[in-house]
Length: 165
Image (tube, rainbow, N blue to C red):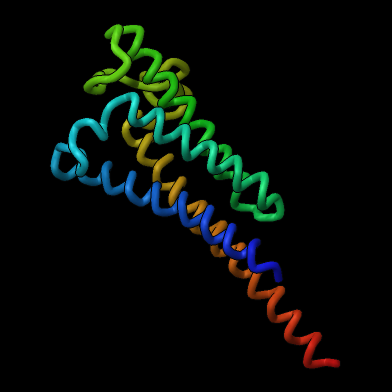
């Protein structure tokens, strides 16, 4: 087993895992305390859009690097939908306020959730956003688990073939 493969898999899945865990903590803080853990700047349309752009790019890198991993495909779908929502909200924010950054608009409903531009899903925008965030934490975790099992399986097969000779 190529050690570089193992290190890259651990690192790339790990980056997405820890970034999303931090993002979840921000949203939990917002839900329970009424303010984001890192302050109001962490809850702006620009910060959401920029953060989710990074996660979407990392998901595409995971897909490119680990095509055999079944968990990267739903991750790319979820991150793309999430990017669509936050991109739409960011464009609406800029068009409404004329600013590039600032406090989030209360009526930022996105695209797919209730009250959104398409409104095809029967879920409140904030709940849809939290669902995206949760899936963007769970899916890389499962992807990491799959990659780990693959590495361990190859290592065991290599050990078994050495013992057989």
